[in-house]
View 1 (cartoon, rainbow, N blue to C red):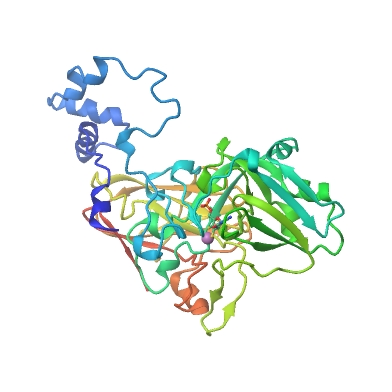
View 2: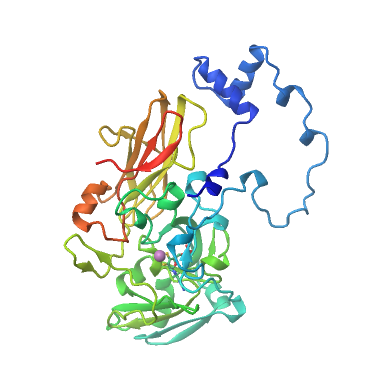
Length: 432
Ligand SMILES: Nc1nc2c(c(=O)[nH]1)N[C@H]1C(S)=C(S)[C@@H](COP(=O)(O)O)O[C@H]1N2
Ligand SMILES: [Mo]
């Protein structure tokens, strides 16, 4: 993160926040924000935010036609996707990062959900949209957008994680912020038709063992997916978080491949070919291969293993209120099913406390966790560790390196450490 980005960190020291800090310092138990203001009054320091008439209370606000489609209020202007310029040669084939350090809950707003494209985000109108299903099928079919809308629809919430997420951290702690280390992920509620419904419409022949899927963009991002997965939970989606997909996320139609690496989630989906074997990617898109510690490579790693990260406090979300009540929060997910537990450590993994899941884990979707502590103001080595319904536990960096070495790029799901200093600032570090 450069200085410019550091400078965009939000200033939350409003009068109210200051008063709350005073209140808490006074030794009282953690109370509601309003109690902070009450304490200030009791101390005889009038708070102009309470005693003075404020500008927002003396004039008119915006009329309902001011913003036909709304954006976040300007005070939240730093909650944006960011890229890392040196990471890729050109923004056309590049990636940016979701500001997970500044979000809460589990749903990623589309406007700040990361993007990854190999040949740029294209503009494809619904009227020009066609989806072809052919190959080893009884009846090759072409669907228009309107055709897709006439099939029984489902709503499913899934995370999409790029296989390269956390990929810059293999050799050592590198990027200073959860947005940059873990922000190649988003989680949306999709509406669409199951791929199974469409494949059944075409009739998959018994020899059909794979599908080859590709997009309408120049890169086409062609990928092969085993027929079992295609018939299980893949989704042909046209809405995300209730609205049409954003252009950058594949408007008008994308494929969702729940729990599997992001590169298989073909955007601008235009063709599904049923084949008897896996087809090598026909275009020169990236090959997602994993190097192993012994120098050999693993061709395919489809499933995203269980992973978690503390989103706050973190380098871009430092503690500003001093010691006392502190909400530690983060995200956990697994491509193998639901998250069942998240443990948090403040001492670099020596001792662990089970965090509170905001809601029971959902399969292949982000889970929000919280741990409410009384911070004594001393430094912490903050970590989180996810467990999924298969019993798999997120590995330490050392455990992962023992298998994968240090030259890997993809599938880094190791435990992340933030060194939180006495002044509340945090840094990306490694513990042995
Ligand atoms: N057609 C097409 N689909 C694509 C890509 C692409 O470049 N073209 N990139 C893939 C990769 S590598 C990832 S990680 C995800 C990113 O999805 P997003 O842009 O919605 O975050 O889309 C995948 N689908
Ligand atoms: Mo990706």
